[in-house]
Image (tube, rainbow, N blue to C red; front, side, top):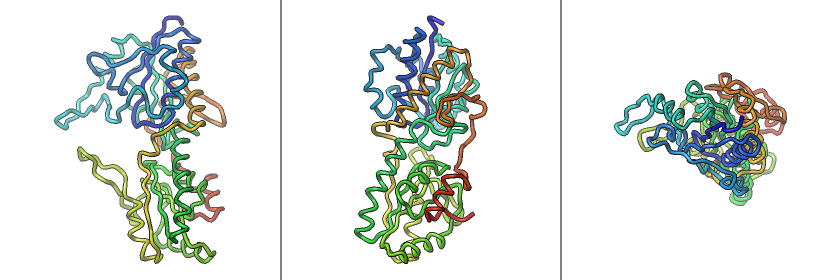
Length: 356
């Protein structure tokens, strides 16, 4: 096994804990196996650039301060699909051969991809690789936790703690809009932990009348304020997506909180305020749980390569690290179970969770 050359890259949106995973892979690969480790810069783009854009890691470049650093020291892009790479004129070009050629030129024998379900799907057939799941949305299939989720949840929970006293002081309804794309893991977990009265997630439909009834119930119990958490991917009561156009004409989720505030203010006769956390959930110092999970994932990913088990993704199941075929993960979204433990818990606490 001595002399093996492996690569590692971070792909898709950033999150807290990526550097901890990088550090773990490097430590395990160099300390235990004597390999050379090359960090690919800017996701898949680093292997498509000419000259190649990479850095060779040594133990001195992955000191313990990496555990505390948010983002990724390698950089990342979320528009680096080699099969449909965006060109300056707006067209898409298949650059998959550029990626494969770069992989061969660097002479790496395996590539560790730290990414979400999209990255797993896109790179699945291009190289010999192993996967490490990361996404604040926590929507990667077959793993209880992905890197970044714990930190994002902590940020949302702290926001709830800060909104509650100001809501009470001004007799207001506070709506917290959180990230999550098409799933409600952040919203539901933050809502339970933060004492929300209403939690809206994409997996469960709701009605404005149902929300208003819950707020009336809260008032009848003697409280003069209410807290709501809504996932960005929730649709309007009539079933329409709420998006905003970004530069380049791309539509992204955003605005469901304002939609709800505009319609509920008159229905419940109360001032309503909206807080949109946005990318605050991605940044900052990683939570301890993210550091631990990322470290365990990184060590295990290196071990899988040593065992010749490629095409596998590391996963956290029932308190331990396991591995599953990437083909079982690619393109599959892990959504909230409307009848699962967390949903049951929320309803047991009196949280309005929509209509089934």
